[in-house]
Structures are given as structure tokens and as C-alpha cells.
Image 1 (tube, one colour):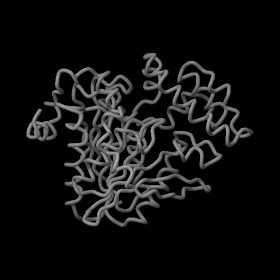
Image 2 (cartoon, helix red, strand yellow; image 1 turned 135 degrees about the vertical axis):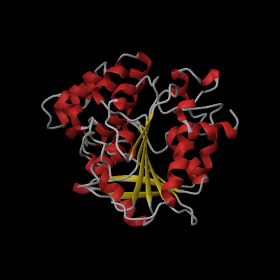
Image 3 (tube, one colour; image 1 turned 180 degrees about the horizontal axis):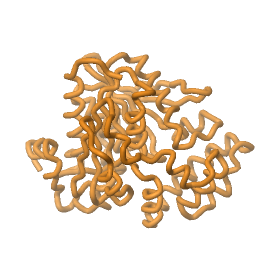
Length: 337
């Protein structure tokens, strides 16, 4: 795929056709998080400024900012479950957006990465108001228009932020872009468990994170039994019983599900990009969401989970679309939530 072809497919994602060697969903998904993808981002990542942001109830998180004086907007990027601001798919997208003229900020999700070690409290995935506080703090510090781009669980958080703008505004937020977002958490949990390599990947990452947190707060967590579970659903069920106020894992999943009517009347433009062949997030729940004037839904046949590679690792549909949508956002004027 030439650069011109990549641009035309960004205009019409239904025409997205990856190179044959990149087409399998497993390849797309594996390469999304591969270090091969982020090799060209090493200096970019090292040049970021680290900020500590305050959230409610004394919680803290971190953010990595690559600023540029000529930027018309700041794009905030959210990683996926058990990822970090240094995850390859986040670094690559941030670098692409920076090169396109945007300032970028890679935010650590609640109870992920170093944020998990900064706070004794376990912050469960339903508590997006904590992330809202961090975004609001960042908006106050920056003052420019803001775009929000989230991947997988980060995409789920981004969609909930967009959904709630009517009663929880974020000054300056002008566009939300969700890549491979989790729509139905229970379905995603079962899809992960159905694939042994993916299941083991996430269980190992969870174990490393919470062993580190347990070492700092042994009396609080008592995570040994949770870490002995052999499936993500069993691990989540026990975690919900131990660290949340939910009566069941089903009620917990409902707490951060994106429901059918959630995006039909969003106050800012929302772009949702997911693939029919995603091995982690089913396309069906995204297809069931009600349409709306500000809601754009793009579901190409190929792309895997957080992948969307075209002819090479540097030709990426999600990044191309994000650059175009955020450029249009920067050109818009008027009142924002």
C-alpha cells in the first residue's frame, strides 16, 4: 500500500485491505503490542515530560506529555487493560499525532502501571469518574482544545466520558476516538478465556502488577488467592467479591458496559473503529449501538485488536483516521462541553 492508498483507505475504511502477510487477525493483534512497532518512538518516549495528576479522594496518576509550541490541540491517549503509557500501540499513535502537529499526553489508567503502586486503594474499572478528574486536571493545565483517543479498555473509558458529558462536562473536549473499544465486558472476558495464549498473556500481566502492589500494601490486598485463578473470569469474580461493592460479576460488568443507547445523543463527535475479526472484542455489540448525529461507527473486515496495519507497521488505519478526525476537530470553532 502506497501512502496515497493509505490515505484513500482512511477516507473509506470499508475498503481497508491489509497486505496478505498482515491480514490474519492474530498477526494484527500481536504486532499491535510488539516492540518492533515502537522502535522508531524511543527518542520520542524518552523526551516526554512526566506529570503527576491529582484525582478525587487523594488518588494520583501519571501522564507523559510531548508538547510542541505550534500545536493547536492536545490529544490525550488511553492505553488498554494492563497496558501502560509506554505500550507500543499508544507510543506509535502518539508519535504519529505529534508528527502531524499535535501535542500529546499519554495518561495512566486508574490502578494500572505506576498508578497502581502510587495508591493503596483498588480502583475498579467502573470508576471512570476518577479518570475524568485526571482529564479535567490536564485540561486546566493545558487550555487548548482536547481530543481523546482510547484503545480497548481505554476506548471503553473514552466512550463513557463522552456519554456523560451532559452531567460531567470536560471543558475543551472536542472529539473522542475509540479503537477496538470494549463494549460488552462479559463477552470480552469470555473471548479472552477462550484463547489460551491471550488468556495466559493477561493473567501473567495481572499477576506481575498485583504482586508489586501486594508487596507495598500486604495487609490491604491479600491477593494470593486471586492470583492463583486460572481464568480471567474466575480472577475477576473473586476480585469483584473482595475489592468492590458489587453483588456479582455480572453486575460489575454491567457497571462499565456501553449500552445500546449510550452514544446516540453524545455532545461531541465520537468515532468508533473496531474490526470484524477482532479476537478479543466482538464486533456485534458495537454494531448494535444506536446511531446518532455525532456518532461515527467504522467496522472494517480486518484489523484484529488494536492493529489496523495496511502494507507495513508504519501504515496504520487507526492512526491515519485519528490524524484526520483530530485535524477537523482543530478547525472547528464554537462552544464545547
